[in-house]
Amino acid sequence: MPVSVYASAFRPWVEALDGIEKFERIEMLYWLHESRRDLVRQSPVNDKTTRGTFALRSPIRPNPVGTSVASLASRASNRLLMRGLDCLDGTPLIDLKPERSLFTPIAPPQPGDFQIED
Image (cartoon, rainbow, N blue to C red; front, side, top):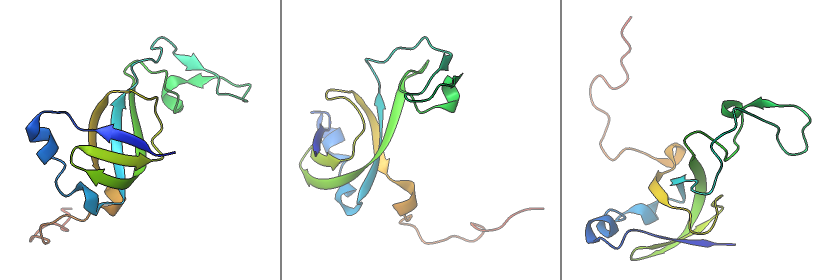
Protein backbone atom coordinates (compact mmCIF):
# COMPACT_ATOMS: atom_id res chain seq x y z
CA MET A 1 0.00 0.00 0.00
CA PRO A 2 1.48 3.39 -0.93
CA VAL A 3 2.24 5.89 1.83
CA SER A 4 2.21 9.67 1.42
CA VAL A 5 5.16 11.61 2.79
CA TYR A 6 4.99 15.38 3.15
CA ALA A 7 7.91 17.78 3.16
CA SER A 8 7.81 20.53 5.72
CA ALA A 9 5.44 23.37 4.89
CA PHE A 10 8.41 25.76 4.99
CA ARG A 11 9.06 26.88 1.44
CA PRO A 12 12.85 26.20 1.29
CA TRP A 13 12.28 22.51 2.03
CA VAL A 14 9.63 22.16 -0.67
CA GLU A 15 12.19 23.50 -3.15
CA ALA A 16 14.73 21.03 -1.74
CA LEU A 17 12.64 18.27 -3.34
CA ASP A 18 13.35 19.59 -6.85
CA GLY A 19 14.77 16.74 -8.96
CA ILE A 20 13.87 13.94 -6.53
CA GLU A 21 11.39 12.51 -9.06
CA LYS A 22 14.35 11.51 -11.28
CA PHE A 23 15.12 8.70 -8.83
CA GLU A 24 13.15 5.47 -8.55
CA ARG A 25 14.19 4.62 -4.98
CA ILE A 26 14.65 6.97 -2.07
CA GLU A 27 16.50 6.25 1.17
CA MET A 28 14.44 7.62 4.02
CA LEU A 29 15.69 8.22 7.56
CA TYR A 30 13.14 8.66 10.29
CA TRP A 31 12.82 8.86 14.08
CA LEU A 32 11.19 5.78 15.60
CA HIS A 33 9.32 7.93 18.11
CA GLU A 34 7.24 5.11 19.62
CA SER A 35 10.05 2.58 20.06
CA ARG A 36 11.53 1.43 23.35
CA ARG A 37 15.14 2.41 23.96
CA ASP A 38 16.10 0.18 26.88
CA LEU A 39 17.06 -3.27 25.57
CA VAL A 40 20.72 -4.22 25.26
CA ARG A 41 19.89 -7.78 24.15
CA GLN A 42 16.83 -8.93 22.22
CA SER A 43 15.27 -12.10 20.89
CA PRO A 44 14.04 -11.82 17.30
CA VAL A 45 10.55 -13.08 16.52
CA ASN A 46 10.47 -16.86 15.86
CA ASP A 47 14.07 -17.17 17.07
CA LYS A 48 14.95 -18.73 20.42
CA THR A 49 18.32 -16.95 20.62
CA THR A 50 19.19 -13.54 22.00
CA ARG A 51 21.54 -11.10 20.35
CA GLY A 52 22.86 -7.64 21.01
CA THR A 53 20.68 -4.78 19.81
CA PHE A 54 23.31 -3.64 17.30
CA ALA A 55 23.30 -7.09 15.67
CA LEU A 56 19.61 -6.73 14.80
CA ARG A 57 17.42 -4.49 12.66
CA SER A 58 14.91 -4.15 15.49
CA PRO A 59 13.28 -0.73 16.01
CA ILE A 60 14.25 -0.94 19.71
CA ARG A 61 17.48 1.05 19.79
CA PRO A 62 19.22 3.54 22.11
CA ASN A 63 18.94 6.17 19.36
CA PRO A 64 15.96 4.99 17.32
CA VAL A 65 16.88 6.22 13.86
CA GLY A 66 15.17 4.06 11.24
CA THR A 67 15.99 3.76 7.58
CA SER A 68 14.13 2.36 4.60
CA VAL A 69 14.70 2.30 0.90
CA ALA A 70 11.31 2.90 -0.68
CA SER A 71 10.08 3.32 -4.24
CA LEU A 72 8.93 6.77 -5.30
CA ALA A 73 5.57 6.32 -7.04
CA SER A 74 4.88 10.01 -7.68
CA ARG A 75 5.49 13.57 -6.55
CA ALA A 76 3.05 16.48 -6.39
CA SER A 77 4.56 19.66 -4.89
CA ASN A 78 5.56 18.74 -1.32
CA ARG A 79 3.85 15.32 -1.41
CA LEU A 80 5.73 12.13 -2.24
CA LEU A 81 3.81 8.91 -2.74
CA MET A 82 6.09 6.09 -1.56
CA ARG A 83 5.83 2.29 -1.74
CA GLY A 84 7.67 -0.01 0.65
CA LEU A 85 8.26 2.43 3.51
CA ASP A 86 8.78 0.47 6.74
CA CYS A 87 7.49 2.69 9.55
CA LEU A 88 4.32 3.63 11.40
CA ASP A 89 1.94 6.27 10.07
CA GLY A 90 2.95 9.65 11.51
CA THR A 91 6.60 8.70 12.07
CA PRO A 92 8.73 11.89 11.90
CA LEU A 93 10.92 12.05 8.78
CA ILE A 94 14.51 13.14 9.44
CA ASP A 95 15.98 13.14 5.94
CA LEU A 96 15.63 11.63 2.49
CA LYS A 97 18.09 11.15 -0.35
CA PRO A 98 18.44 9.18 -3.57
CA GLU A 99 19.29 5.55 -2.85
CA ARG A 100 23.05 5.40 -3.25
CA SER A 101 23.30 2.50 -5.70
CA LEU A 102 21.19 4.52 -8.16
CA PHE A 103 22.95 7.81 -7.56
CA THR A 104 25.28 9.03 -10.27
CA PRO A 105 27.06 12.26 -9.39
CA ILE A 106 26.14 15.16 -11.67
CA ALA A 107 29.75 16.38 -11.92
CA PRO A 108 32.03 14.57 -14.38
CA PRO A 109 35.00 12.67 -12.92
CA GLN A 110 37.84 14.95 -11.85
CA PRO A 111 41.59 14.25 -12.02
CA GLY A 112 42.54 12.23 -8.96
CA ASP A 113 39.05 10.86 -8.26
CA PHE A 114 40.20 7.28 -8.74
CA GLN A 115 43.81 7.55 -7.59
CA ILE A 116 44.90 5.56 -4.57
CA GLU A 117 48.04 6.49 -2.67
CA ASP A 118 50.38 3.71 -1.53
